[in-house]
Figure 1: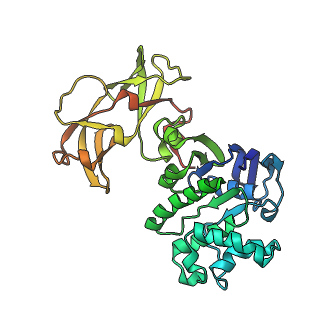
Figure 2: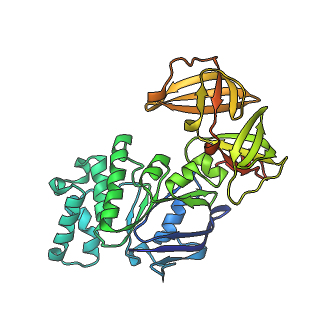
Figure 3: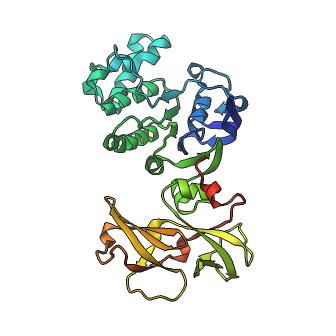
Length: 371
């Protein structure tokens, strides 16, 4: 299985800094996703690993071999572009076998790996078809098969599903992961689709402004992000500015806009009484108290503004004063028709679902900015 190591990688385009001292390790057999806002450097990073872009500083290692400065064809990697770059004058078989042909592999020796790719990608019945006669999904499968036919242990995917419609993307992403795992490959997958990254990767890299913000397992980054930007970018989140009013046995009591919250402590973070902080909770963990029983901690009173059906859940927006709006998501199995616009509601936030963060030096707005 192929390992990848990036050390102190930097790249600028004039006044634009695309990569800032990026360090990253990708383990053999891992499916790693890289996500971040537009212009964050994720495509520059994967192209630097591939050799399409040459970094200004830093090194790239594949299986402890220094490959910085080598061209993509000298690294023996599989690369799949967002644009489905098939040769229009070649049928499926010829497109898949192109890399082997360039390497000088005799036609007879190409036959076995090509047939294997056709079966693996469920393209056997389209072997003689030309790109114009294929669906978007079949064209991208052909592009993936061409990348895999090189025999490389490393597959780089640069927004490979971005040009496909939503339904096809939803199916093909799981097929991609299954193929990578079945073949024992290492995959680095750049995407702008958060759901795609969460559903198929072993680990996710969050990038912002050319830097790696956080790396971790999907469930850890979603449920227990260590960085406020990660919480903001990966899904929806509620952020509340507060002040630590008391230190409790399990953590802290935080005052937010006249309400009091019990919050569990976070290992490695110690807050002092009177210290400003940020609380974060995902919308799906905000619960409505329809009995309207005020009192106690972790309760917020507000006015229901909107309730929107989003397919698998209802998304509510509740105004709680001072410009603060709380988002809540209810699965349809818990949907309550009793809640109406302009209703006064009480919301309960379980202490174990609330994360506490230090107040950012440059302010919350700057910390959560996509730039």
